[in-house]
Image 1 (cartoon, one colour):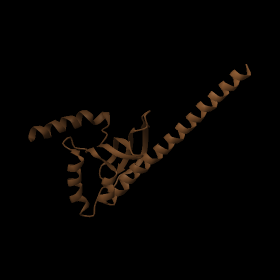
Image 2 (spheres, rainbow, N blue to C red):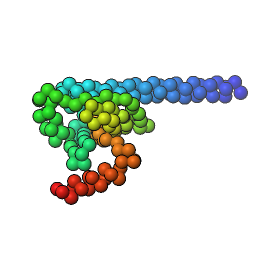
Image 3 (tube, rainbow, N blue to C red):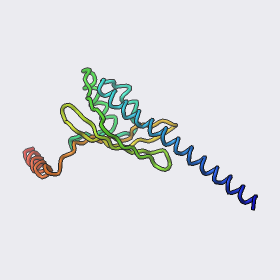
Image 4 (tube, helix red, strand yellow):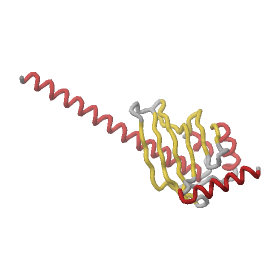
Length: 165
């Protein structure tokens, strides 16, 4: 009986240690992801081209607020270069953020609410991947949330604009 109790106690301690280590790793990953996203916004505001793009994965995609704005990273670099060369980037202040990490610990996704002087409240969503211990942004999607009460009006206006073109 004592032998069985010792084995159960060892198993419980082992499982408790694994749970604790996993929780610590998740907290560390969440902090690293928060840092990456905070840096993304800071560097964009500073128009810091090189450091801004160092945060992205080589195969990243950026989705802007316009339906035509789907940029593989090479195209987004080109668009951004001309803007950042003027010394002006874009400034978004994060007001809330949720981060989710896969069980494997190699993929994370997020949603965040942001405030921008020109666009007001915006939403950023995206995916990060962890390779060689580093998190990089694989996809970023910036949207302007439309209140449901205004959605039909906006859809009608968008359709009018599309028919004009």
